[in-house]
Length: 362
Image (cartoon, rainbow, N blue to C red; front, side, top):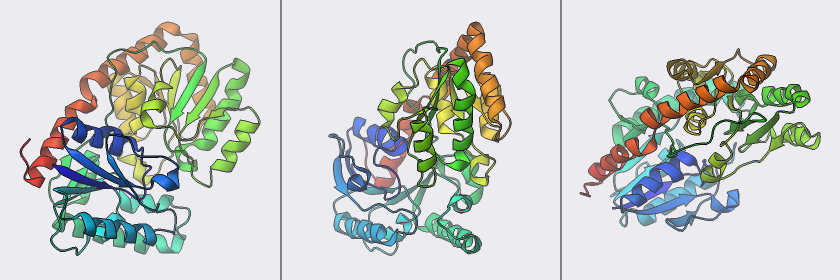
């Protein structure tokens, strides 16, 4: 089976797209052409995919990327068995194309809800854009195949769709958590708790506990982080490929998830929490419902109030000062991740479903 995978929004090294889904397809013996904004993001394709460069869709500059993706889709429609798209924008790139192969939209997020978090979108345009996003989702459901990253997204659609959760690769073994370094892995923005992370770093400095942030920061957040780095408050490693970034979790004291109380986060399972669990480190999280569910079910961390840096710092120091509890908390999270959130378990269902839609027998 030859699969065309396209994104103009996500980083080409996106963990869900490249390191989980595409890797699963390649491991199953399928050919993948991966079209993504390589040049715009300053990376090159992995050797195990055929890479095609696309423009990046960012803020209000999106139409050129969509047009380029549409041209590519038209040129390859007779050469592939199935297309897998990862951005709502790309629904426009495949719409109305005749004699196209089966198209699958992987729904990563609550698209209407995320529009409230876009600083480049004027507030007066957000209600009509949310309405248009709902119309676009309904049209996509009628004409495409859908995959969902969260069970909570099912309520937005009329039909049942396969859920392929944001799980992770869980190592065969992990190191016990250390006592001098706290980590954050993921996208960095105000709504994801950057201001709180910086304040936590300031509070922990006298206690010789470092804070390390790993991830791409949005344009509004980058100056704040650069200032914090210049002042020696914390370490910020910017974007790292997922397989490299995950290695930075090993031996940390704890992993932070400091999401604000935003509509798009209320029904989503923060992938970073599962990644912290998978690497055997305790989780410190704000009380978004899915995060609380995970932490309380597996007893793998601490829940702190919204936007409360002092509470986060206290939780870090409590874990640092109680070695036995820190190690036990990390061990419980690791065992739960290995048993319930190991990506290969979902990878088989993902590949089998795409093969069925393409009419290909493995």
